[in-house]
Length: 459
Image (tube, rainbow, N blue to C red):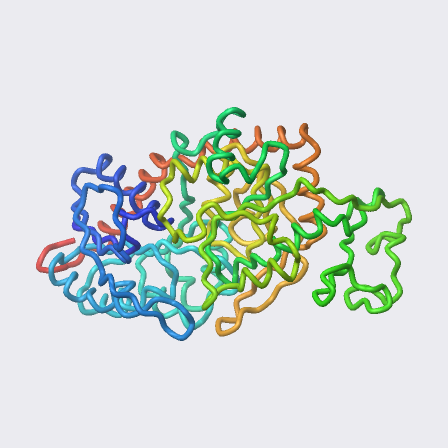
């Protein structure tokens, strides 16, 4: 079987590149009959070796009005020449649906079979993508959430759809000792982050759907203590933030709550058995996030609005996606007291799994792929917001739950230990060797189904 991989270059350390490398370096050992070539997207800074040829897309990447790369970033311009050169029997595509127009368009002409590995990070599926997804002979989702979205999409229900989760390398992502963590914190932060600080960690891209502004808001609440905790219903009521004064809003000017609400009772159950929040001067935020103000959030402005600039640390401010080695990423995770995601939706969410493997308790929204597999503290969804252009729904995480769960991880060592042990017990199930075998089985099944002639050969 001649297999063409269409995805981010496996020689680079971006998330999709790592996934491609982990799967197919093992698949070749399982099935030596595989002939693999990759059309490597964004092969700009190769740092890893792989046992197959990579034909790179053009390194000249321009950006469209929405900030997304185009020209040959995802191979549309060079795809035809690659197909002529490689003549694949089967194409494996790992990408977001807005990236893969050329692969679907070229299929009728070249006759290959197509397996699409798709991260589904929201619902419903956008109709504008249905035609290109429908070109697949088989769909593989990264979560049962994603499978459900795809199977409920008109025009896709007839396509066989499987679920294959992602994996994590436990020889790389693992807990470090307390002494190692102390040294790593000092090294990465140049002495800024001390042992007694409580570190909220987050790793990811500065994208609108990640909703990273909530991380700064969360930090403001933890450091200010502007919230109340109800001992009856166990919910936290955050005091309304005023972005003009950078403090809690005057009770006579409330918008979120009834005007005149004095926070003398729980907003949710009205109990007066409440505890006033206390400022926690130990709380800091550590992010690994390349700021993309043309497409993401204005991080500098957000830090000033919430008055948290001096409590936010980014060890790699100028480093882009995939430019930190997996080994150093593990060291970074180990510097966190808890990993917090406030994303509006994830197709899988590799950093959550990597943090779990590093022994870090995780906090995340109760939405999208996380709900399938993550072992941590899910937070309520406050509301769902349709996304501009696609009308897919994004989740907005409940701030009260974020505050409550962070405080639990900061202050309750017993609960923290239980959560970490549970996660470390589950992590071995995310085994790349088992995942690679699943892929070999899927690819062989698709290759051998409905025999036909491709490039003059019977498939």
